Amino acid sequence: MICPLGGCVSSASDTPTDVVGADRDAHGCIGSAGYSWCEHTQRCERPWELAKAKGFTPSEEHLAHYCSTGSVE
Image (cartoon, rainbow, N blue to C red; front, side):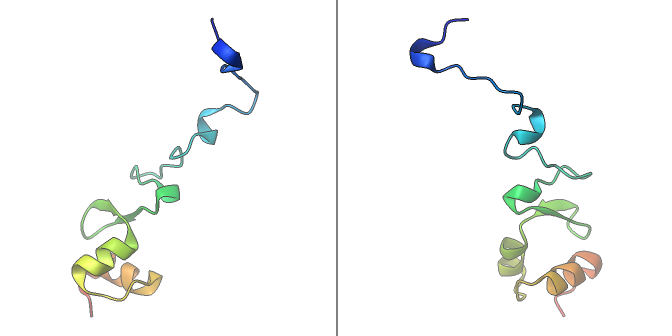
């Protein structure tokens, strides 16, 4: 392997779990990118984006309610 200007560096900590975005949950949602599973939409959603799109206050409580019932009330 040729490593110009010392550009190739390897360490014991270079494992797949150290890679940004390698924290997918059971549904494939990347938590470190702000995504969580929404049962109602059947998609990985960013809570603040979903709240804006559906017209509810962005909070864990409102997200949980919407994703379980599909209602913003």
